[in-house]
Length: 326
Ligand SMILES: [Mg+2]
Image (cartoon, rainbow, N blue to C red; front, side, top):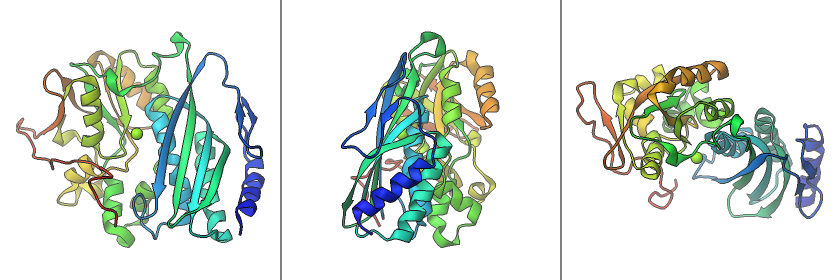
């Protein structure tokens, strides 16, 4: 299979998918032409997945395709944006038709889930599999439709700290490898971007800082703490975990530092508790209040029920240039 066969196949498959409004020219020209709808701002994010770094080499092609797009959709969710259009860059040692077809199935399933249209990209030969997406979302600029999106820097001292879903499942699946039960494995391979929740949170009055949990709760909340200049305290016994994570001896550490959960972590004024719970209920995603933002030295601390600090690893969370890939 050559590059042009692949692009031809991609075009065929895309013809089966709905096409978002405002995409004047998609795949097939030297570049795409877009007309963002009036009264909307463009939200742009880019994320790359590399074999051996972001997914084990044995991952099924469908799951790699799905996750390539899903992690980008999660970043749009963290900004409260609605997915609109994306580009794709594929680097592979060779193009195997059956492998690529399955990869495309996964990618297009995520595209359909998020309501995003692929508008172009590039295919190259590379020494290992690498997939890059640039995703564009829309944010209504009408003040009545929100406060201008969710940002990391918007947390205030006095806010509650919240997280969606359950944490640690993806990290446990990664650790168990082939031995992971199928439902746990899905937490790693098919994360569900919290798009509806992000949009609902954008409309909550006095919503604070927000990010998605990709590198681990402590690392990602650390970004909110630094950007907002707040000290964040988490209650260890409130961190939401599934039974499988709870039942391993270091389950709490997996939930705090594991990463790849793609949940939303955010802060909101205490006066907004009802609205935050309603946003969760409306969108079918559990939201749990796990701590508070305070004045003081920016950082994230975990407390046990007695109020004693729980020791956490100094480098909690994923840092590409501090770690070596397997
Ligand atoms: Mg992110």
